[in-house]
Amino acid sequence: MTPEARLLLEQAMDAVCTQQKLDPQSNIPIDEMQARPSLPIHSPEAEEGLARAQRVLPLAKTLMISALQQLAVEYGFGSSYNVRIQQAIDRVRSVSRVRPDVDSRDNASVFLTRPHTITFGTIFLSGLRSDEGMIGVLAHELMHIADGNADSLRALVSAVSQKASALTGIDIRGQRAEELTCDLIGAMAVRAYVADSPSYESVTRRLARSVEHNCVDVDEGDDDHLSPRNTIRALLAVNPLLVRELVFNRQERIQTRPTRDNPDR
Image (cartoon, rainbow, N blue to C red; front, side):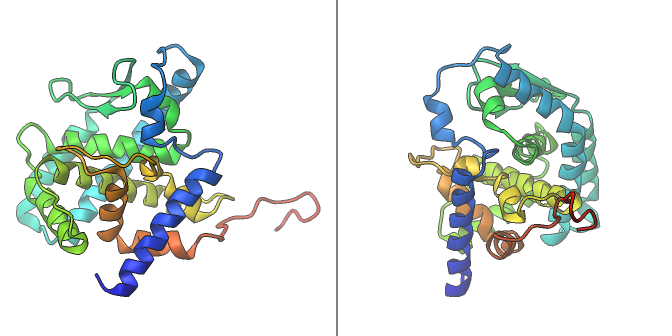
């Protein structure tokens, strides 16, 4: 990365994590969710999150499919890859349910033996407090389903991870590569949602909700996942348009609410 691009990336990360602190609908950071006690399925917070997840699932599927097609084009996967993409799309379209689970706590997951269901920990359901945050995580999980049992999108995942590794110097292979690609798909889905649904809120605030649960104080990864903050860094490195929108739209409002004194405003 050029020094200018690296500076913009750091400014975008700062914008994301600043919004996490200021936004009343921000996602709760992962490390805070991990420290919370388990949440019963029928708690008001979990039920509210489940209702949101089930409501936006059809839209998340549509946005995720568009993001997958766009990513394949961006990385030069031509007509020979179309069969794999169509099979992936068919798997995504078959998803119909979000299942709450106490033991999953702050995680969401898919079990490919149950390809029609996304399982959400009740703490995670309650910690995603906006449609943007929920769409981003749903699209992430849908990408796992799109990849399927046979890792049919492995070549695309590898292309994304190689580019991210080259730009950041972070070693991104194996399951880490798949998780990063899922995060990228989630961010792309949210970006499309923000573009298609004008709001009085700033573009930066709404875009930040796709990744701000990674704004942690305890920044630890594992064999399958980058650390949360490195996840933001790698995701932004391969998505320069998102970087620019986060940095240059910090104060912008893409639609102003009408007022009683000036109804045409």
